[in-house]
Image (cartoon, rainbow, N blue to C red):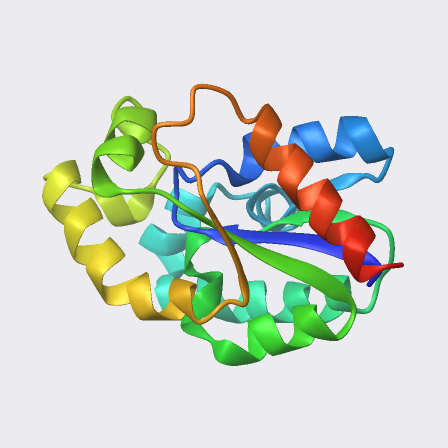
Length: 170
């Protein structure tokens, strides 16, 4: 396994844990949403508003295929990456895919002041509950899962992933 791929709901810790993994392993961190923003010259919010979610998902799918072919990178995905099972299948061919889970209360606490999440427009708590419920079976279908709810530090999560990566590469 060459890559470490982090999937999970928004606010589950993908970016934070990804940074720690990058610092610890020396592997570069690729944040898919950031890369899409850089390549399109638009924020995720702008892509959703101007071009629609299907267009965003198409951009995301192309990037999955590109990144899955690479090696030795930490890939932090967007929360909806699991909506297309081909994304997970592609990443699993050349990487350790770990789903970071978080309960609704933890997610709300982590994203309540974040206005950059287009799917949380309106009543954030209601949207989080709705989206989590819809995606729960998709997240639970990922082989490796770590619950980050209530963890005061991302360090143990990063260490669990490193241990898992090393045991899968030995």
